[in-house]
Structure formats: structure tokens, C-alpha cells
Length: 383
View 1 (cartoon, rainbow, N blue to C red):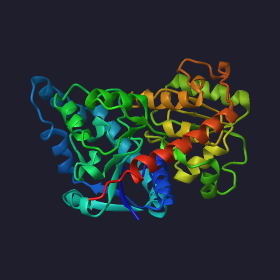
View 2 (tube, one colour):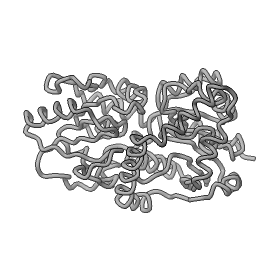
View 3 (tube, rainbow, N blue to C red):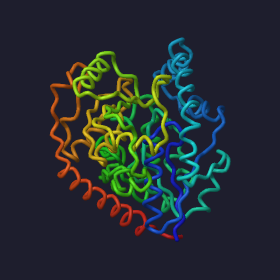
View 4 (cartoon, rainbow, N blue to C red):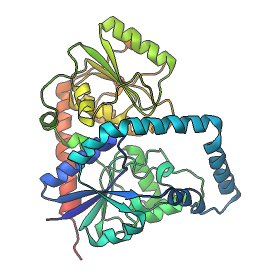
């Protein structure tokens, strides 16, 4: 039995993150592997070192970048946002953490213990989610499995979360290039990631389905149980970033015209009027909704899996690379579910051909599992 360590983003405040982690573990366990998700516990000083001291400053532009970053962290608006963000995390943690404890096998290690992991696992998988987002990991090489022997390094549906690697700091691209060269196998989540890999190391890689797509509706329903989320017909609203006032106006008009109650689940902006739910209730709320309105990749995924009609907006904070949703919608022929801030929702009539969607879903599920079998589990090289 292969013992596999997963490196992904950790934190009990993001539904998509917890559910993709759970799904990847489930698939690997079905294939007979023993799996742990590894959470690296970092001290604040270690984070600051990676963010600033270890930034490999080599140009005037790099110095300006670091100064602007420091100043940006202490502006009144930034401090206010960080305070609200921390409040959101603390509010969600108590509701979401029990899911991680019950459904995800997780091992927490200190930063000083990361080097010891290589001898404890047969192979490592980086992914899914934005494990290679330069705005999150900077020069830290843990998510690139820098602690592992090259023949143990794999990725599945990993995402950069950006459309290109930033030009500043200057050495960042070289760091990413060097970190990717000795992987045994790489697959990414979206077309933008495929393009980045090609530009960095001149390798063509697979765009692999997100792990949440590798479990069928029936498999997800085994965890959800059949009970409804709400008796009253409702419209589910879930935004990672706070939507514009005009967007809210369009949502309210749409709900009134359809005779639907609006249910809001809290994203990354704290709002006491919005609900905090468990990851399983997050899926259940999508499953039984009449419509879903969102800016979230994984809300789109579960709307597809559950055959729930949905509309998707761009994220208002500019942090969500549209490529990941574009790739998903193109795969399933649902490009017309995208809407703009000023678009009246009542005038949008996407073609929800769920028979066709389900056919593609079966193909993607099969393709994803085969990629894992062929390129990770069956291609593993022993010492």
C-alpha cells in the first residue's frame, strides 16, 4: 500500500478548499492508498521572512515592491479589511473545523519538521486548489514539494490562481521555474496554468478535472443524506468577494420575479446577516436550490454536479483568475451562465442541457481517475 502525503492550502474557512481536499483523499483511498494531508504550522516570523527577507531582492523595482507591500499592510483601509477577514475566519472555524476532523486525515507538522517528511511517505501530491499562487506562497518551496526526492513529486489539478507569474520580484519566475523542473508528473486545473508551465519549463501538461468532479452526485449524496436544506423554494447566493450594489439589486429583482427566498452563505467578507454552514450543508444548499448565484469556482462545480441552474459573476476583488471558471464552463458548454454587473438577470436565459452536462461529467470523472492511476499511482518510481 502506497503512503501518500498531500500538500494543499489549509484552513477551516473555505468550503471549496475543504471539499477538494476531501475528494482527492477519497479517490486515492478508493485506489488502495493510505493518505494524509500535511498541514505545516508556521510561526508569524517565518511567514514574514518568506514574504520579505527571503524575497531575493535584486533590483530597485524589487525594493519598491517590498516597500509598497509593507505600506499596503498598514493603511487604515488595509487594517480594516484584515480585521474583518480575521473575524470571518474565526467565525467560520468552529463550524467548518469539525468536518476536517471527521472527514480529512490530516497531519500537522512544524516548519522545522518538514524535511523529515520525505522518509515517511512513498510519494507526495501538490494540489488541488491554488497551491502555486505566487501571492500566497511567494518564495516558499513547501508547496513545490522542495523537501521531497524528485521521484516522489507529483501534482494533481494544481492552480496558480493567476494568469501569469508577476514580473516583480525579479527572481520569482526563476524560483518557480527551478521548483517545477524535477516533478515526476504535473497536471494543473486551468488553461492559464498550462500556459504558465509551458512558458516556464517548456513542458505540455494536462489540464485535469478538480477532485470534486471525480465524485458523482450519488457519491456526494451518500454524505449529504436525502433531507432538504429548506422547505421554502430559494435562491442561493454565495460570493467569495463582496458583490457590487448593482449586483445585489439584480439578484433581488430576479428572486422577486421568481418568487424565491434569498439565502446567503458567507464568503470571505464577514457579514452577520449571512449564514455560516458546514461543508456538507454548503453542497446540500446548492443541491436543493432553484438557482445559485455566485463568483465561486466550487459553487459552479457543485451546481454542475447537482444539476442546479446557476449564474456566475467575476470576483469584485480581482483576486480570482477567470481562467479556472472559464475552463470549467467551456468544458461543460455552459459559457452563457456568465453575467456582468450591469446585466439584468431576468434577461439572461442560459441553456442548461444537463443531460449533456452529465455525459461530460462522466467523461471527466473517468479521465481524472485515469490520470491519477496512470501518471501518479502506476508511474511511481521506488528507490
